[in-house]
Amino acid sequence: MGTLWRKTWRDLWLFKARTALVVLAIAVGTAAAGVAVTSLIVLRRDLRDGYRATNPAHAILDTSPFDPALAQRVAERPGVAAAEARRVDSARLLVAACEDPALSVRRTF
Image 1 (cartoon, rainbow, N blue to C red):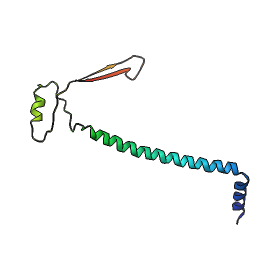
Image 2: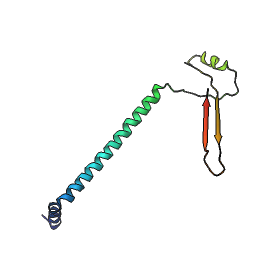
Image 3: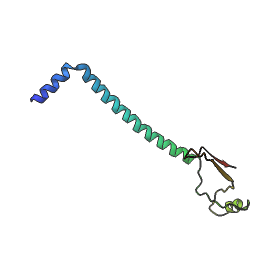
Image 4: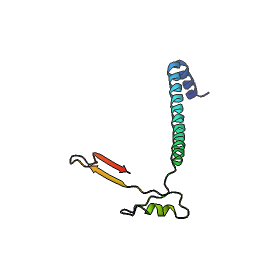
């Protein structure tokens, strides 16, 4: 056994509390990293599945102004499962001292 190994073992033996704390810190850090990665995997899967369960739109067309009967004609086309007409209004409140909008509102009906 070389001098370096002898010193290492001697330090580990003499400073048992510090050695235990280092081992504990490494274990806690490894466990935290594992929990973070597992949470990321679960969160991605659940968000993806939740989004798919909402039956999201495959296409959104902005055709304003349009005839209200346009949605009915689009829904009657072959291969179209559903179509709905909606109106979207947007508004922003800008404050001179602030770069970002202080308030942003989007209303859909």
